[in-house]
Image (cartoon, rainbow, N blue to C red; front, side, top):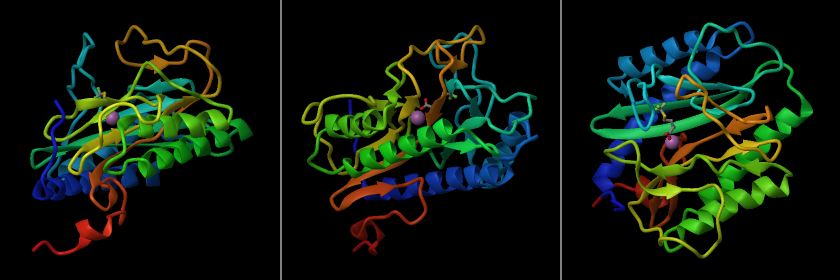
Length: 265
Ligand code: MF3
Ligand code: CO
């Protein structure tokens, strides 16, 4: 069942998203060769807790046999999503996708970015840029009156036009009081299909993109999800509210449509 949020609820979600974004910004400032993903995880956890939030991923069980141990998912190179922070230092030439989730005053926020460490390959740079552009295309399609398939098709269109591949095994999702709500948001699909997007729907839109056509597998730790063939992967994500006046990118700074920014009467 799709849950629509009222304006006052969206305002709390924007606060949750701000806490989450500020924590990701603190991580971004520390990303560098030689830094371990465990260190980044500690920075994220401190930033969330000091703002009165709670890390949403830590202890999350989902379908896995073991609860997720981190505040961040840190997915290096061929890992698509759900990498577990560890003591391996990031190295020049790596790419790392950092995914972060927060609960704050009863609502969740979800965001991811992919970072290049030092000098990365031309292909890695193009992969990250295409993944970011596909998220922007998905956000641009997140208009009241459009259908969910318009968002999915917009993402897939950009990725495939760049010669890359969307991941099928993982999807975006609705988000609100629960971290994962309906509907699922696939990164591929057909325009004009699926549920109509109504004001108050909040979506975590999260393209996962690989350099080659491949399956994604899950390692024995129950979480780490690399490409089966070792091809590189990128993942970016925003939490986005549908409003009458266009998408409100809750996890971005100052991407509020005019009506949501206006004082409420
Ligand atoms: N952002 C991801 C999602 O949408 C990661 C959550 S998995 C977790 O599901 F276990 F790390 F929480
Ligand atoms: Co998500």
